[in-house]
Image (cartoon, rainbow, N blue to C red):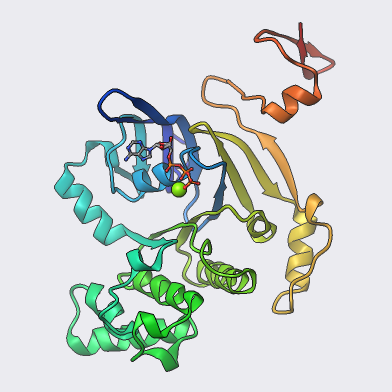
Length: 300
Ligand SMILES: Nc1ncnc2c1ncn2[C@@H]1O[C@H](COP(=O)(O)OP(=O)(O)OP(=O)(O)O)[C@@H](O)[C@H]1O
Ligand SMILES: [Mg+2]
């Protein structure tokens, strides 16, 4: 184990319990997740499955309840709330669905970016803001207030703000949830190109399954655990490279990725409802046999 390459993000058996007066909700129920440095990962899953909770843990916004969580070699579990605050500022950039949470409405695009840059002179802040606005395609909108920008433009500014302090990890929670399909595609493209150019590790939570077309790895959370994982096929990656820069319209979406069930460290695997239904498994017990090197799971 000691020779194993350490991942940029490592969640082992991560648990998050929310307790309110009488109810306890297990938002993360023993999640295992590894993410390599520089990866672009999409996270999908039903409402309430734990996607935002995972992002909150990764971003140091809240403390997990149990398990292990390492980001960039740092044990987030051992952090005090002050240390978590430092980690949040230095390592993470956030983009939220609601642009009101991303931007100060009384500041221009440029001011929003400059306001969050730390440890730089005024001139350096100005230069960085200009660079970032240019990078997200909004050079001409430096002096615009959020209310003067479209939803898509506001999200671009939000991405620039999130990148202001050169974070190693960019977390986006449904960043295209509030814009139309065309704008969503453009924002997605921006994430892909930033990932390639800046090698920043990006995790995007999305409801939009079409996003999965372009992301090499997509994990699906169900009930607070990683249920399945989809990996893009090599042949599809080649097709993508071939159409790079052109209007994107690949038809065979369904064969873009191979889907895998994920084994946890103890070898447990989750059978989705769809799989159980298709295999006619209705009881709680299954028979597991190995036949000619294949694991066969049968209902009673
Ligand atoms: N602060 C909180 N206090 C109590 N329960 C919470 C809190 N935050 C989340 N939960 C609960 O934890 C579970 C997971 O919530 P989470 O917000 O992570 O889901 P999600 O996958 O992001 O859903 P959505 O797609 O609707 O955004 C839900 O049952 C939710 O009600
Ligand atoms: Mg959410």
